[in-house]
Length: 189
Image (cartoon, rainbow, N blue to C red; front, side):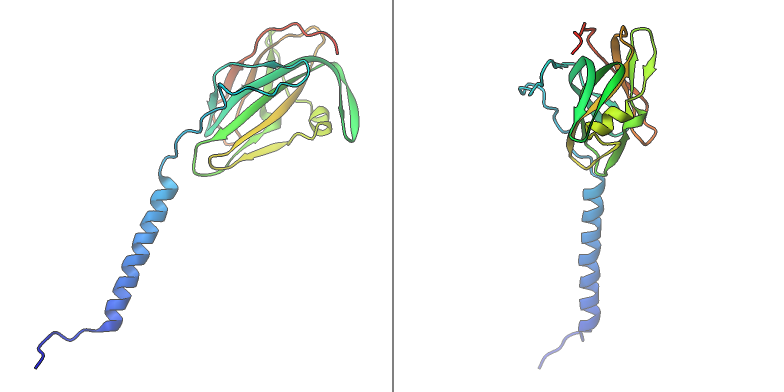
């Protein structure tokens, strides 16, 4: 003879399914909100420098959730030549290569048009839309979770101007950050 409590198997099954679903939801939320480790910049690695380019060794800066690392720079360029056009500078082109990293769990944006090159006389110069387009550089960069992206910014500065700093800003109202640039005399090329 068996004596026991009657079991409602459908209620027990529903309770177990709810428990498993709740645990999965809690794990998913914890994973999405848990701070990810900061990606390491490529310092210490040999940079592949292009013709007449100098390596930039300044520290990374942060604007919003995006970390910007200066990589390389070239100035004194009279023209840019791409696969579908060439364009002469009104002054001289200055190219700054930057690396963007995102340690957040969500993607974040950076608009090329929001970046500025500051010259030694204090003027802020926007990127050249013509040079950016000819060199097929993006107007907007979306940096995904744990992603590192490198790209070039082209600025058309007056002939006698000297680049002093790059002022970067994310697309989500982060505070602007300044990257000092070396004062370098570039030959016309």
